[in-house]
Length: 220
Image (cartoon, rainbow, N blue to C red; front, top):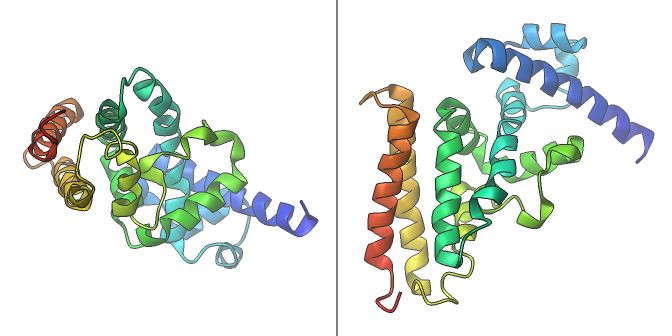
């Protein structure tokens, strides 16, 4: 790695660490350029040399919260007997972790910078390679692609080949499950209706299973 790249990653690391510290102690809404620059030890003008704007930096910092998900995913799916069980367990894992931090996951997957998330994630793990739990999982379904719709398509891997769904139904089923997830995530954020993360998990998995059953082929 050349010296210029090392310096770039060092400075980005400082800004990301500072932003994560503020989010973790004060919340996303309290992140300011002045606070970040003060903790990082660099001027605000330096920040704009490495990040598009403050929201872009916050997105980088929020990706660190995905570490628990990427580490937990392997354990969630290790006992799956087939691609269908694996699909259900991927969703259960993703919802379990995201409903514990709905503001963070909403920002990551549904904010203005979400369409460039794939590039941001790739850059993030170049800076923090040690946080990549298991590259064989390819960051699995929820972390690959240009938007959440293309990312979640990876969770269907093997389901068509094993005869659980028709290929022509996958895109529609994928969109419906995302809409269910986003709706419950939004309700958690608004606290309307007020329910816990555990209740939200039960609710969304119940709806996903009902929808999936409607598309599942008779022989399975």
